[in-house]
Length: 240
View 1 (tube, rainbow, N blue to C red):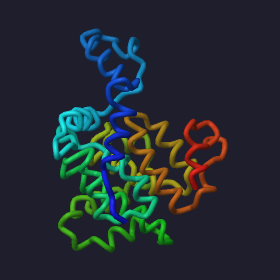
View 2 (cartoon, rainbow, N blue to C red; view 1 turned 60 degrees about the vertical axis):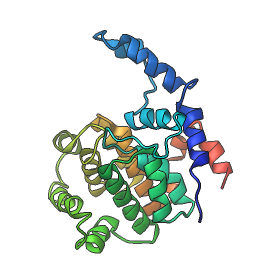
View 3 (cartoon, rainbow, N blue to C red; view 1 turned 180 degrees about the vertical axis):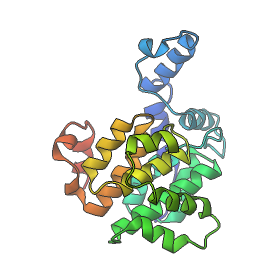
């Protein structure tokens, strides 16, 4: 499929740019950042650094719009819907770089997509499949080495392991903690609940973990009561 990033850029500006609740809270956060308990004043939702940079770069009409300051999962999040609608990996790279040009973010996003792709294609153990498929790839050497180490921690408490591997939004911690949740869980609900309980930037882990288990076990593995409580779910389901 051919892909244009123009619609994506328009949606980013509409949903996260000036006039959105995210941009409003960003300005409030700047106003109150010297106040010790500023989070009690500004409740969120929050906007990630990559998206802040992307909004500014789009408005400036820069050719390269992605953020560069942080190594986080925004590129993966932006690309996931395109992946599920059948876009190839080359097209995904174009979407990822719209939001982030960090090489680290790019590499980990593609690793996630390869794992989800294996799950969708019926692999019994997509994590092992990824390790086997890319064990000779220099691009994924560090990722595979970490996965092998995390396998040995499978039986350990997830909350404790997350504190060790990384609770923040950034790679590699968010990826490694996600892998532990996947390896130590058997289903969507259990994996997401332990991710929430572990705290930190659990949303950056849950988007990958949820996509993985839904790909592996199917749509019906997602608790229906959760879907009903998710505001955009009806609109998304009606598109299919």
